[in-house]
Image (cartoon, rainbow, N blue to C red):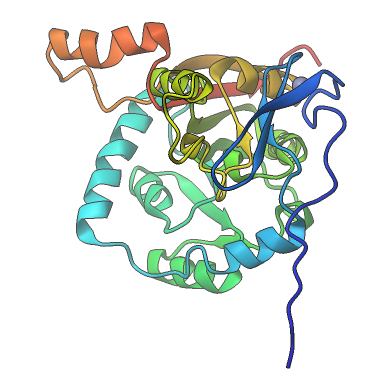
Length: 288
Ligand SMILES: [Zn+2]
C-alpha cells in the first residue's frame, strides 16, 4: 500500500514575502485553520505558513480538467470580456501578440482571438491545456511557469484574470511577466479586493465576536494565498518594474448604460473601492 504523506505547509515566513519587511503579524486564523498575515510596510496580506509546493501541485492537478464550459457560463464571460476590452483597447489595439496568463478554459483567449489578437494561452495543467489548445486552435503552454522557454517572445498584452491571488511566488512571476511584456505593452490584472466594503464589515463583526461561523471565508484560503488591495498590488507591481496607468473596481457597467446606472453601479463604488474585485492596467516603468 502506498501512503501519500503530503506536508501541507512550508516553514513560516519571518519577513514579508513581497517587501522583506520584518513588520508582519497575524490578522486572523480562518475557519480552514489557515493563518492570515499582513505586512505593515506594503500592506499585502498572505497565508503564513503558506501551502507547500507539493500540496499545491496535488490541488491543481484536479482543478480544471479541460472540460468544455456550459453555454450560459461562456455567454456571461463573453460580456465580461467585451467590457474588459473597452478599457484595454484604450491603451493597445490589435493586431498584436497577447498572452493569457492562467487561461483556464480559454474563454478570454478565444474572445481575444476573435478580436484580432494573436493569442497564446498558459496554465499549469498539461492535459487540460492540450484539450483547450485543440478546441480553440491556439497555442497553449503548460507546466511550471518559471521553467517555460518563451524564446524571444514579447507580448503587447498580458492578461491575468483572477490568477495572481493563487500564486505562491507572485513577485517572481510578475518579474517574469515584466520580461515577457513588450516595451510599450500593457498588463491587465484582476483580483479580489481584500479591502472591499463587505470584507471590511465581516472582518469587524468577527473581531467583535458578532460573526462566528466560517470565520474569514472571504479569504478563500482553500486556494487563494495572497490577498490584495489596490494599494498593495500597486506597490508590488512597482517593485516588479511596472507602473499602473489605470485602476478600477470590477464593473459590468459601460457607457451604454444610463447615467444613473453608471453613477451608482460604477462611479460611486469606484470612489470607495468597495466592490469585491478590482482591476489594474499597467505598463513598464519608463525610467529604468
Ligand atoms: Zn510587505
